[in-house]
Length: 529
Image 1 (cartoon, rainbow, N blue to C red):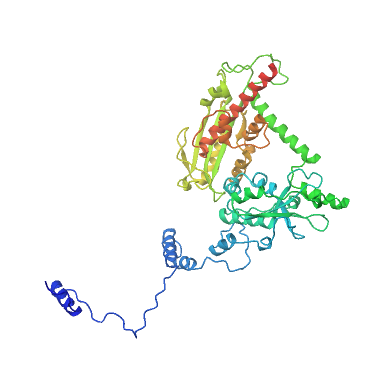
Image 2 (cartoon, rainbow, N blue to C red; image 1 turned 60 degrees about the vertical axis):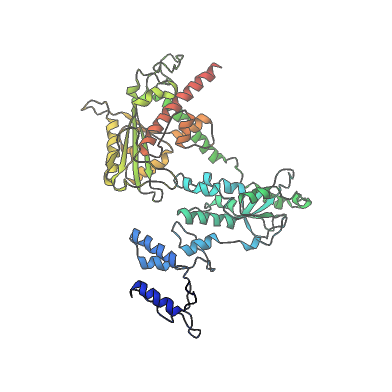
């Protein structure tokens, strides 16, 4: 066997013969000890720049600006953060916002009293913020933040016992600045403008337990996860002698009790109470009037046999009051651009077409008399709401969708109103039908109509509005209204593909029928007992 002790030159020579001169090794290709090695450092932002450049090309944006932005380090350096005011933050500002800490509370131990002058807000009020201070449009995208706020947010909790009822659980507070920071995070994440409400309501978000109080909130601990939050609830110190504030002056005690009770749902003053009573009465009237229009109850002063009963498998026993045509409107807008109209749904029900038809349970036999339309903005036909709700403009279940240019949408809506006001009226007759506009949380849809310069009250015959959200609130004697899907489920109305404007309009009108029939049947049964 040939010796394996061969030189590097011999190996190169043999490989050269095998490769026939097509490939050669250069000798002395390694650096000498005196030759400095090349300084090579991995660029940590290279991949970021490449991703940013690819994204900029797809979006038609300036590549140089995107690369420059991607090269910035994502570390907070200390400049004062400015709240978003609905504008998207830069990466640096957003990262700095998320990394913000509150060192003033880090050195506190359980039971330590807070500093004089710190602003506090009751934890209960914070949890009720979405229901009380966020409107219908923004609520769906903001509520998830509040649902997860004990899991993904840092809070410093404080407690105060009621000095006159120490046996009760204490009131829980957090620093107002932490709640403001939480709102800033939501604003920066979903481009909203949530703030502490202005005017008198702001007082309950800015409670100070200063020198006028005999005691200030005491520290419980810091929570950054849901498990920590739950654990803190179990370690709140027991009340001490000083928590009774026995040496407090009358003025100091009044000030303390005012702070402790500020967040509670107080009994309204006479003016507010009157408004609430009027609104409740209006909801009751909505149910009552809908039943009149559908022949489910007699007109108060009508000379009819009022002992006749509503039998669900027979036609209604009374005249259909006011010869009404119901029109339901539902408008879907873009989640991120609320002024962009994506779809308009319209559903109409002529009460003349109900004559001789038994309603059945929840008015189910009347459902097929509803005529529905679905208008899609031609310019936005490819847009879908996906972030907070699942839009489905392509899934209209009650006919064929119509693609209309945005500029023509107002005219089409007005034409629908005008057509209904003259439905069944002989040509040349100047009379008109009474129109009842129906919606679920109708005020939002009315505001969108106004943005399109459509005013239903300019239409001859426009008589009144009915809101199924309010009607269901009366039906269940609830303090707050529920969404359309919940209402339909509660009434045993099968529904699918919600957040399609045409479908929503049809189901809202079905819900109106169901609420009118169901409440009337329940009322008659109660009278029997």
